[in-house]
Image (cartoon, rainbow, N blue to C red):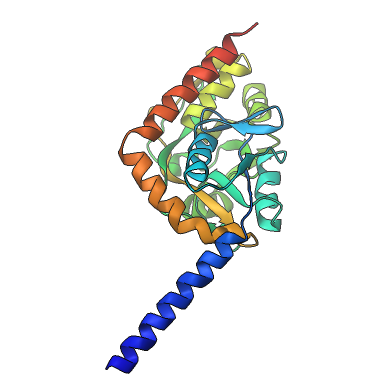
Length: 261
């Protein structure tokens, strides 16, 4: 019995040492996120600003690991950077099986995000569930995923075009080439306001779905060994009010930036 207990302790210590060694190889975290998802994430100069990068920067500081938030281009480009190991981390991302092939998701999610259906003002239609979208033309941004179930529904049942960014998606919607637009509720409203079309669109009362939003490490990054510590910190910061304060601050900064001439 003592022999097997000793072996168990040895294995545990070996695994812990391996994780610690891998984490020690993480000299710096290069993180990226969505360039058009205010106030969670958005491009600001060469960086991604917003509540999500503020969260991971605070955790990295707590762990004494330098972190750089960097824009990699479009949302599809950001995912490609994480897949190829050019970015160690991606934040503000939904889970799907395809992404899980190249990402180690940090548990738990740091927030829940409502996905909405936007339509041109005066062109609302009865909407209670995803089935009400069948037979209509939709539009959403390239690189967006809405979870395994709805992604499969789009592929099998819907006619949804993809555009290079949500601003382009709103143009397609307002041109009449699409009947509806799929986007996160808050970033959709924020981008509509930024594009000057907020008064030309409306949001269906019923949310399409609510999805978990995660931080994830590239499986090609040595920094993935920090996933457990990031998860512990996310649990703490989302329960003690610190992340709520980050969201409030991000909202204020976004509003102030949009108010400038």
